[in-house]
Image (cartoon, rainbow, N blue to C red):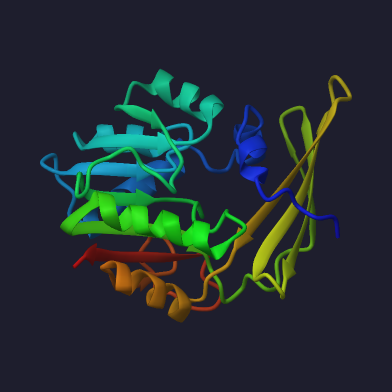
Length: 246
């Protein structure tokens, strides 16, 4: 398999993102924001950080609940789309070094596997430390990740269409680095233009992740397998961690 650029995320989250992840739509975000609001008991009195907010679909869903949320992302193209939603303040920043004061938020949410992008464990740990730093003691958090129980056996190949685009995807698990990797080929059937992307995400098992979060004061109170609140187990679509800053 071809190697993946360790900074793949700087190229990947561009104007093609909404085509590649068309299923991650506003309807899904509405259900996920409703789940978070209920499970974390979020109210209009809270200050919420949507870390790695993408194009702002969750921000808009929270705004409909009169919940004040700030969105942070590294991608300018996605932030430009989020800006058009007018759902709250937006800041371009790297999750390894957030431009906020200690304890500036009472709630933090991190949706759609936005943890584990970085090549080194030190960098991924830096992101977790920043989550803990900006979350007020007693503040609540939600982290939404790939189910690690199934990650070692991803669907190896797929072909699908989104509008005029044909999308071929190849996936594999690297046993040495514990990363799920993906190669994506995007064909514009109208113009004939082809574009290629790579992904590489570190997969954390439940026990490993708990052992990383706990020393930073992030205590996980429950694990869920999807956004209906189903128990976490093999075959669950997601691994959703809910907890509070001690």
